[in-house]
Length: 361
Figure 1 (spheres, helix red, strand yellow):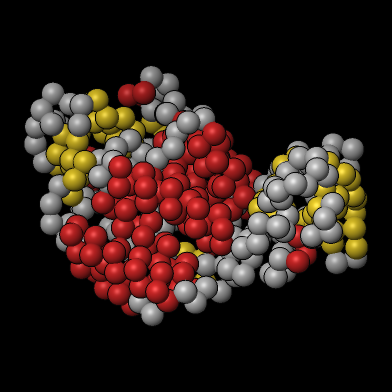
Figure 2 (cartoon, one colour; figure 1 turned 90 degrees about the vertical axis):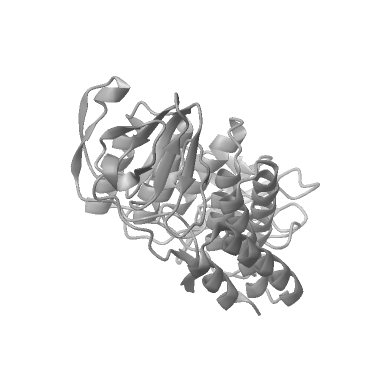
């Protein structure tokens, strides 16, 4: 079931030429890669005021920008923005500039849509529930396989199955493994299910939702590979490239597992921000993984409070409130949704506040 939600992800623009001359690497022919403008680097400090906000607030590298948004770099600062067209814009310091001044054609904020999975899944830590690939599509015919690590489990029996039965089976003591190189890779037109059984007898099939994924193929696979390669070739900070992929590229091709892996990679590398954790919460919510969604939203909220990032604070509270509303915990849902609504009003965003109020039990 798909419900309205608040991810900053947007559709890609049409195919274009990406200029990175200002970043030192000349011109690159590439497919469309970004739906929004985005802050690349901040030397000094910059304030952001979105169209619906009543005041300016600090902004950081990786922040997605809409056309009517206003940027105000402190005098002496150097703020680099990459535009949806791929051109780069050095924001004039000591003055206020609309994003559309430097990145013409950047879209306005639209009411975001986000999928909410079957949240009966991923709620029992004693089950080796599947994390990835779980649903949607994968681009690699030999994807990484990952499931919940069950406390006390020393071995897992892993099998890949289709509707006709198991294709292969193995045992491992790990909760994440590369696709076995001695087994046939995934093929087009087939729906697959990963099944994992712990030595306790608990199985991923004890997790309620039916899980199936398939291999992205044909023109869509070629387009996805082109778009991903174009972003990966850009000389941008790893975090910014990852956010472009996660928010702008992977959603277009329903590459949820790739988005999760990319964000988890940032966390492992020590790049842990409120936004990274909140996006993970969004993706786990979409995948129907309650515990992981809950954990990442809670971490995002703590990071947002510690850094006075009101926008991410609101989105994390909104995520938690939405989660609890779907799993019929009305007291928790009300607590977080009311807090998110108050934060949205503090931002001055009455539209977001109304959307949040609509979720209240």
